[in-house]
Amino acid sequence: MTDKAPFAVQMRGIHKHFGAVQANVDVSLSVRAGTVHGLVGENGAGKSTLMSVLYGFYRADAGAISLFGREADIHNADDAIALGVGMVHQHFMLVDTLTALENVMLGAEPHWLLLRSAQEVRGKLQELMQSTGLIVDLDRLVGDLPVGDRQRLEILKALYRGAKILILDEPTNGLDPEGIQEVRDLLKKLASEGTTVFVSSHLLSEIEIISQHIVMLRKGEVVFAGAIDELLLNQKPTIIVRTEIESDLAKVAAIATAQGHHVTIRHGEAHIEGPHEWAAVLNKLAFEAGIVLSQLTPTLPNLEETFFEMTGGQS
Figure 1 (cartoon, one colour):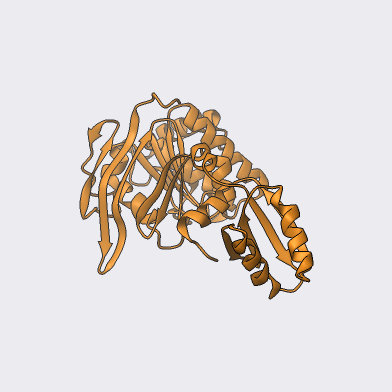
Figure 2 (cartoon, rainbow, N blue to C red; figure 1 turned 90 degrees about the horizontal axis):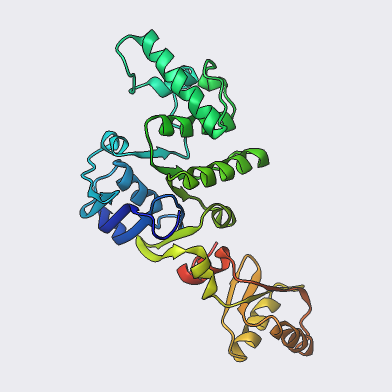
């Protein structure tokens, strides 16, 4: 989808608090149909709350939501589902003692005759499995399904119920490399067919692969919302430094700062903003100061670097 596609989701001035905690503060964003948007932010940034407001788990204290150009009054998850919003939770919302087919039918039986309902749902799921490549044994108990199949089933359930806006919370958690690639390929395919996808994840490298767009939150507020390419274009190259003696890292930071470079230290590394050619200068200055460097790596801007710079995140 291009930037000429209509807006699938518009959230304007969303506020949500829990007691004294402001989970979302004046959040506004506009998301076009057929795009994949990553949601990133430190724990407590408001990602899950914002998506829970969109899915109807929570009512916003203030603000408005429009879906496909129409005002949406979402009181609960049933309202959201009826409006074409589906959500796949990090912790699966499935009943282990029911079969995969029965889990999809639960609460969405198309007919009061269960046998007739089962036949109709099975037929639609087989069509979905063929079109998406998400293959699940519909007659197997969910409790006996591996994690990958449960993930596939949750996505199938959302699509069966007509999701045109799909929210996924940590969708690659617990999956093997083959399963992760399957999720990546599926999300790209769904977006190309017009489905709007939100992916919430702590794996910034995964968000960078899956998403074309990003919503970055900090303390409940939007720090950035837009194309990842646009975000990275404005970032400076970085030099990553490690020292043989850990206490020397602060000395390296002082040297870089004195030369006019911005420095952050995390994970036992100094991340120094500066052109790649300055790495040779830093190496010489460190040698003259008696500091032995165990790593000196110039890097191009990436989402993780940008995230820490913009949110001040530490880990």
